[in-house]
Image 1 (cartoon, helix red, strand yellow):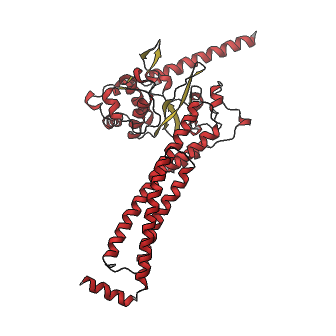
Image 2 (tube, rainbow, N blue to C red):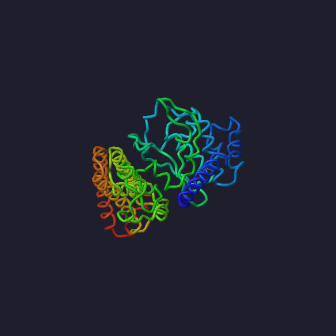
Length: 382
């Protein structure tokens, strides 16, 4: 009997604690909410103006993050008509355009939140994946934000935090449950395509998420040092990030069409980035080749040593061959850019042919005695 009483008491205390916690979550930022909603309307059409207002009125990273969350929840309407027009791979979403229309879907909500957060000094990334609500996995992709607040990573979903859909209608109502959530709780409803952004040492697979799991079986899951991996991510170039992300996603498993489509899109972006690198190197090489031809047509004046003249051609050769190597990498990634790759290869090979003629011409020139070359240059100059 005493055990039963003790159990009932523990349950009661837990309920009281939960109520207090929920109350603190919803009322602990009353002052922050009030101040941020007093921002003059004229300052709300630029993310920088909003950031400036927040920086002036709030000091802690938590307060600044909350202010952004509250303002978006109260002022940005969900664009119900375009809810399926989600493009997770468009990195050019304009925050100011969202502020102008006061409407958007998850990508707009997340991009706006991230933009303002980074401008107030809260490191934030937009993350894409999919969600689970009442054990049902949404067949559509979704995006949210991760932020480092006071040296710890938290998740915030500004879209779900702004309202919900009921009976095919959007209900505008702030939901504090989706502000500053710990990773081990957020994974119950949101799974990112890239397991890095779970911020868990034992990330679950997307198939496990679809099966209703929110916690990996340690004995069957390799330890993942997400802290060090994030540090590496932040030092990587854009293309290195894409490569690393594609490897992690593939390792985590492809469980549905969304996973496949996401991985395909990343690989396409890698291919496009590599093609751009190759094209830029080709353009640099062409510019350098034209500069060299102008120099040789001017009888190699002003004077340069033989070594430096040769180096000019070697530098051009490096540019063209580096571009070709990039295109060889691209052939293994996607066939989508096949025509562009073939065209650029033809241009580079033609440029290498022209470069070979310049090298042969230089060899002939350098065979002339150095003293005679100097006399020839001086006579042509006069």
